[in-house]
Image 1 (cartoon, rainbow, N blue to C red):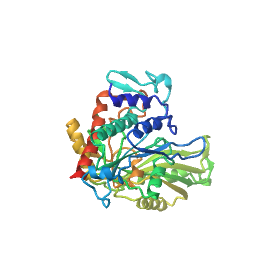
Image 2 (image 1 turned 180 degrees about the horizontal axis):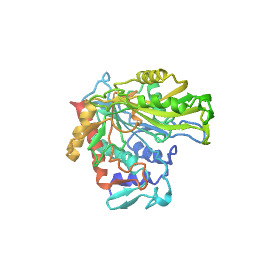
Image 3 (image 1 turned 90 degrees about the horizontal axis):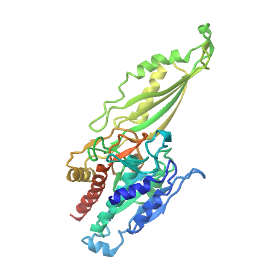
Image 4 (image 1 turned 60 degrees about the vertical axis):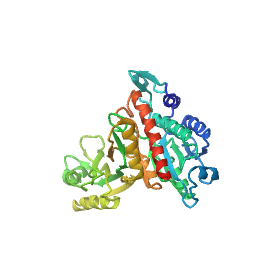
Length: 400
């Protein structure tokens, strides 16, 4: 069994359902501390719902011996910092009886490792650690700094996790140059797809006011459902933008509609609609809000509307990190990786606020959040090797 799988088993045995960490970060911190990392806990959140956050960095910038070993890098040219970021929390298991094996008891069947978090994303975390260990064994005084950022609040509200650590790092002037997030990004095989950005997400809650009344006397009422229907028909046909070379066109989707008292003879007094935009860099929250509001006003609706922005879109164009990721995947797997910004939001949205280059590289995502979540064993070592190769390529770039 590989070192990556052994560590993955340890992490998968921890029942870290969000916001719990269940000891995962301690396991990783102990491994990193042996490599000279300084590990800092940045817990956040209310009592009883505390979120565990770990910031671990191997300090070498001011180490004179390290500078001598890396061609006397001048203090005016500080080392680039490469961060591996991820989450130790997992989604709930669902009904235990539906699992073929216990979700927190790692199990091997037919070339797969089964457990909650196997794909999303504890195997990636194990691959991070072992890749760093192998890299530092070969390059004990590298030309780059390596750091790790972990949270137990990615699958939850994401208010006390990565965003808190990013705010703390920004406040004290920490600089991050490159960030690799271990989200499961592949389709069929590790390396076939990575994310070099994500769409933004903005939700709205719309309450349309009418007048409640008896269905037999509609002239004495004002049915908000009927008033809303023409506006809905217009909204679903709108092209919000055309997307671009990296992003799909912005989409608008209604997720919930609620009206009525439950009685069959009562016209409802109001209608509540939940909807969401997944938007590209071609649109802004303000432009989308204005266009939607104009439709509501054109249909002379009386309404209240509140907005929540879950995340802004971000994009890492081809450059040092994307180039290193592509080259590492090609060398390890023979694949020409596809750059993509599809899928849901991730903590990359927070990291992109303090780091100019963020990519997500992980295993196939076919089983994430499902009963009997798994990862193919054949995907594990290539993933670890890709991470190590990215470090080696970025390190060589600094030495060139």
